[in-house]
Length: 441
Image 1 (cartoon, helix red, strand yellow):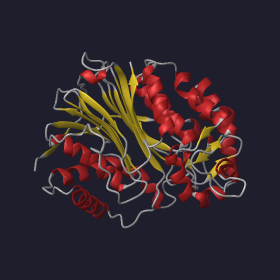
Image 2: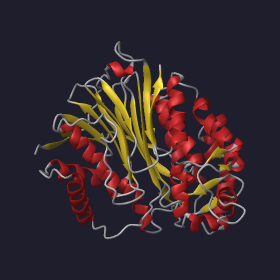
Image 3: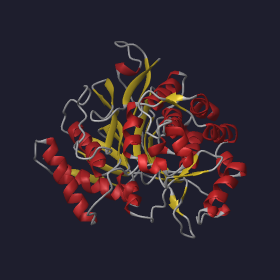
Image 4: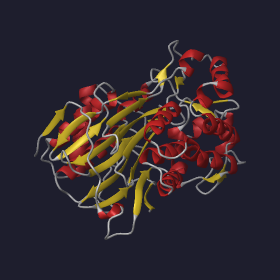
């Protein structure tokens, strides 16, 4: 057993070092990316290879996910990111969760586009258009349904059948959900991404796209106002800090539900002597859910997590959600934008509580040890917390299979980049269909 110590936030940075990121004893590597959907991870790796930062890679991954994994990462949703940056010396949290409209209603005010635009403007190195363009192209010309997306489509087919736009994209001529390998496209979404590529966040929150989203919402008894839609702002704050053994961890602040739940889980896991991972994590999940009064959850909360690490030492970990698979299940006509479910609508609003981006460093002045995220439910949060605990115990976390998900829920996933003794590894959830990859230097 070892102790966990929660600390007040402060600005600090710990330089990333190691032969696997451009050292003499390994081929040059310009960074790593990991996530639930392979095409999105490849987009992140390509950005890193082009000299982009981890923030550029995370932004490119998100926008690609909005095309290739919209069940969990649509433009209508929201999320959280943690950034650890070398040049500025900052550790920062970006909070851009989808919010309830002030007038109520079933549709959330979207935060993802504003959040990633803010993140990229501060920490990106490449032009904004470079991060958005690959997703726009895939939406226009088509992409193959991945195994990761196919699994989510099969369980979300009821929602797909109730929306004409989703049905036209993801159902075949016989009315069945398309299988892995089928080519799909979304021209309306490509046009919306074109506006975002050209004009940044205003291309989404103002102008034609905003007008069409708001008009559709109003026609369906939604309550979003033009002012709250165009005025959405991402919140920047200091992340929560905790010392777990010799590791310094940064994760969502206690002011958001995700931070409170993650803090409780990390505390419970750190104090356990249990050696069986399934038993240890399962008991920690049960204790934390009891503490927060959560009795039951839907099978799929419509969430996903991903991370990137670049050769300069910048690390970004993010988790986003639609508050249910495909959110509200309603697409704003002419935009390709699926609207997230309002958090207050039902218990899928708890999805944000289980978004757990985490970055950890090796000691108070050491290199990055972990950048990853749990998402989708309490077991995703528990799995990233347990990965942190394993690192703090000195266990090897750089080999395939080192990462462990609980296997208790099909869409609670964990993805992480880990670095130990100069070696880094991008580890996708072993129970899912994601990808971890390195970018050539």
